Length: 621
Image 1 (cartoon, rainbow, N blue to C red):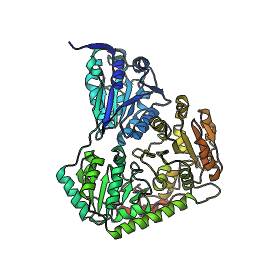
Image 2: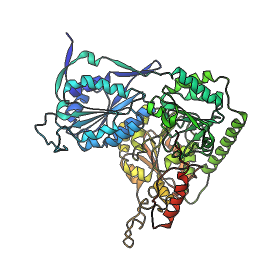
Image 3: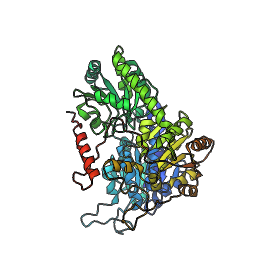
Image 4: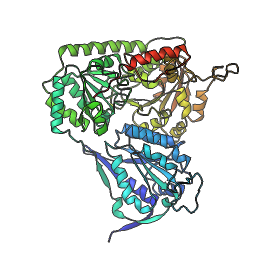
């Protein structure tokens, strides 16, 4: 007879999660670090009670359910997807607050388990508080919103359904190809119902992360394509870091001389001073990477999904004979641009290519061009780091001051606004996972909560968060969670009086920054172009438990940065910057549609420029 134990559904779920492990390359670790969330009537008597009985499964109370998912995403990204958190919420608004976080996790291929409370499965007391009623079906709730943004979704309407649902959830969460947000919708009455669960269900389970090899015939063809190319280029995406393939990429690039451009997710795959590293590529790319991309006859994409920023809206690769080799575990990405699809692990494939191409190197002329362009870019970066702009510093100077102050292993984070583009171009990443950019969803409000996840994942590393003033105002409240958990991060708030990034984009489209500045409404014009709004970011941050600094110059900023290294708690540095001094674009473009018809001359001119650029967009057939 099978031995059983009587547990509530919630108790069984927590016990199961505690016994899930993951293994890659012989290294085994617990997959779940605990649970994040907020309790309400939809989960307090179920998940809440179960967590109270399991104090060895860490519970972290957050201030917003969306933030919980961001913390989990930051944590798992820092662990290269080998560990994660579960996130719990009540029903209704607590659940739907997590939908944005779910989309972010799925788009960035980050494993996060979401456990939203749900309405009563037995229905007799419906409609319950916060229930969405439908005249067409009783089998619906707001949790159905999670379906399009989850890689796996289920509703547990009986406690015994955990026996089949949880293993499927873990299969997806631990898959390097299929991972993303997994949502298990938990009716509040079912959470508290008991069932006789088989003890075998709670045994230790180790989920193996394999390194699939490329098909032999396709690998041979890839070797032939590389040998016959004249101007090959590697595009290193986030899959390089997730696979732990940085050393393999280093060896392959050094041996062959093939230059490397990095996506936002792939930045840090190589050290910035690696001889083959050309830095950022695409719409926010560097001059050398974009120039090499324009003439490349072979693009080797490694772990990239070729976003519009990476391809400069399909204008980056202008060689009419360009071909693609795509190394990616996710088949859809491997087949993009009609490429030769190597659906395989990045590290294993790079190691095989290195062996097969032992006698191959790019031409001397190509190597010289790479070296010269790289040198020119380092000179340009140094110039932008030290503009000495007055009276307010330029954003590039703030980047330079941070980079020249922090250590090699420290982590630099951002996600939205003008910071990601400038950092992509100018940040000199020294080590893998020292540049943490969420740019798959570019979600405002991700940065501060995610920094707590990064710090939980790497407590020995200093974590720096860079946010604009608009982003800060969206979600500063996890500063209080940092204080509650005793976590130290350093948050740098750039005050440029509004949404600087979109303001610049608006101006480039002929709309003069409309609706992007923090200004009061002018009764004369009826528009938001009245007196400036003064926001006391320092007072806000201090009220949430941070130590606050307000340097007035770049020199003072450097001193404050050096001082914060000695602190053991979270600090916020607020510095004003000139929003009109921007980092240039470097022979690249991004497709943002301009109004085809307008009475505004500026928009009409922008439309003509837009139509000219559209001619450069390519179909790779």
